[in-house]
Amino acid sequence: MTHNLTAVFQMSARDLIPRRHYPLFLAMVFLTSLYATYLLLPPINEMDWIRTEQQVRNMWRGINPYCDPYCTFLDFDPDLNVDEDYVSTQAYSPWVMFYFGVLAFAGVRVIVALSVAFWIIIVMDSGHPAALVLVIHPAFLMLWAAANADFVINGVGLWLILRGVRGWRRGVAWMLIAIKPQVLPFILLLEGARILWERDWEAIRVIAAIGAISVALYPDWLLETMPSYLNIARGEKPVVEVGLTEFPFSVYGAWGFGAALGVTVVILALMRHRLTEWRSLAVLLGLVWTPYINPYSYALLLILFRKTPGWRVGLYLAVSLAILPILFREFHQYERYGVLLFLLLAAALTTPDTEQTEEAIAARSGRPVFARPVINWLAHYSPASH
Image 1: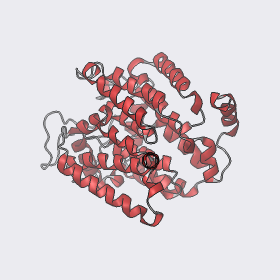
Image 2: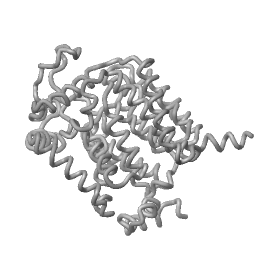
Image 3: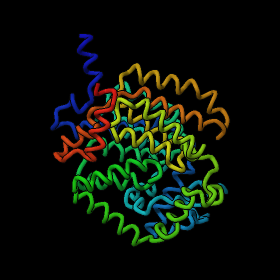
Image 4: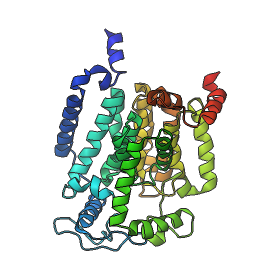
């Protein structure tokens, strides 16, 4: 009996629920989780979501939200609770209007509830139940406190990519992540190259159509906002000057090239048995090298724990909670060290995901292995192969 229970807790819902009932099961879990979270979890901060929904509303009204890089915008709708801190709308990629149009008048409780409900679905669909407890991890708590749409954007997009969607769904997932391209830059590059490699023309058409329509409607995103962000990345324009916070939370943004290179070496050493698991590496290294990121974006690391044994999940959670009184006591003082620890512990404590190796992805897609010479070299020299 004990052995059977252990086996059940090491399986995802996809393995346990009959295939014909599985979509209905996921829908019921999602709606139940969404409703319960909406009722029980009060929002802490409204600013991020209000700025986002005002951007979406404006875009559907034909109001341009793109300048160099932000437009000063104080004319918020009367139903939104704003004060003098709301100096602009957000400046997410223009196709945000299509993805979030249905939520343009949704309250902040909805975006918080969606984040929790999607986390539950991600774990139930492709992970082990033990990972559900990570909803109280500090990175997820920061996501709740900020009420930012980051997990609904990048968490859902990453889950769909890891799930192996193809065709139009793959194009939709890629463009969803590209709403905030600075969060998962290496995933965008890797999966964009893979789409071309596999000649997934349906995904390419969807990406091209969404991008072309959006940029045609709001060309200033391409002509004004993107060049200014590139100037920040090249160090030609101070982050503070363009209205972004002076506290970046990526390794590169916080400490520069040398620190990012050193942390990269450490992560590759910790992941030495997983060097052909490029998607996991792309998530980890993207958080190292992106010029700018917020602390709540580190909640994406939790997705890498979805198949990790319970004791490792518990250890990660315990250590992360233990450092809260030390590294998260003063606003924007030592959190960068805290999220760096989240990053390194994720590389150390997550276990290999054989379904996400390049060899396994190629086998499922029926295509040759992506970048085969590099993969063969890594597989040959990885300690796991000896």
